[in-house]
Length: 243
Image 1 (tube, rainbow, N blue to C red):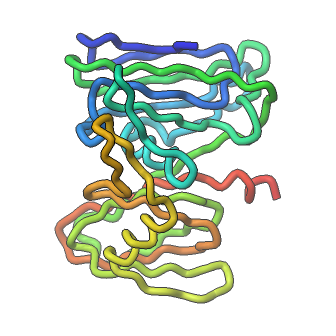
Image 2: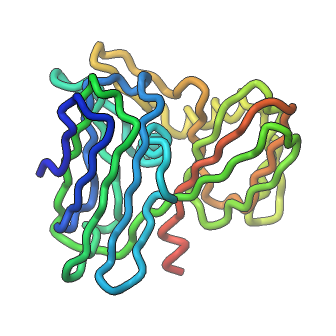
């Protein structure tokens, strides 16, 4: 079912969804590579209870799509749209909405000459295993920083020449050092089909951004030269949350 379309000529759009869905499908006449400033905010507004923030406030739509599609899904296209992708919101079914609960979807900083459309995918079962995300940054003046990653399964990382090395500390206590080139190779090996364009060309990765698995990784250490802000956008591992 279609839940939102801005239809062009507007830089923002919002909708309240009162039916549980398991995924959103995003369509646009804008090619994925051309997404830049667009933002998304997703939350479950609970009636009489604490809201569930799916995204940590307003975040990059591009980073959100990359975190949703890494591993099992690919960004695709069709004869009608330059970008089509399925964004899973909940594992094991649709989001379990109770009486008067709402899924609130807000888009901002859109290109008002382009179209952004979302469908909501219904499921035969319901679940409370909602995916949630966290965003962290390494300031331009910092040269060495640790990020706790236990409990996350996916990392979207800025790929910038200022990064000298990335160190993973695994849940068995072992540490491994990687260059960006090595991480890109490992990322592509884990998910070799990342983007199928409407001209039939397939790409395994994206410029200036790395998609990386985080299962079994307790800490990520980044060493870099001064001068660039490095962003980390991570998805919580719902399997660990249920332990």
